[in-house]
Length: 300
Image (cartoon, rainbow, N blue to C red; front, top):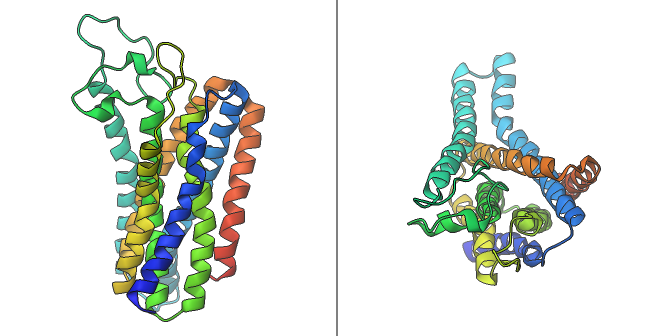
């Protein structure tokens, strides 16, 4: 398949992430709905952690099998294992340092009252943030968390794009089309996972109590960050095949998504609704596995 048609497939697979973004503009949903939205997002992201780690581990598992059967050497095991551990560490710990940096940048102005709650997603209202030199430091915790989710999902979708591009380059048109259908459905649920904190965050209001809905431009930006890498990965995958590159981006995605899940669980704990947490987790994980079933049926 030629490059233009392959890029069109990558665009179709990535653009469906926009379908779930309007949820982020909900006006002050009820506390129970906020808790449910947050829980569903956790369920979707937990599925993604399993999905990317299982795919990232496959080269290591294959290399270990070859070593056991005396058909391979120890080098590939160590090489892929190093990439796996390194990508996971960077993906997780880089966001830890990022949040610390943002907390310092968003510290209180001189002479202002100290903030009693520790900095972090769900811990501060917009009115408690100072006018920091960087614009992102003045965002609400919900907006910063949505950005982190978009980055993690974008890394995951880059690896998906590699799979589409590589299949099309090998002439496996039917297989590539099935991948696009499966990934497209999958990305639609990921769009909801990105913006769920915007609708679910109880602190997402101005000082006068009016809702601070994100603009359509902001939501579109999140969609580009989360879905755009599918298109980019398709273009790169059409040119060459690199299993090592896939492992790096999959583990980077797993680490960053895992960090976000920890933050969302903290928000869920504040709601004190374990029943809604269980229901939402179940719905989110079933949605993830259901949309992934098409890709699995295609043999990916």
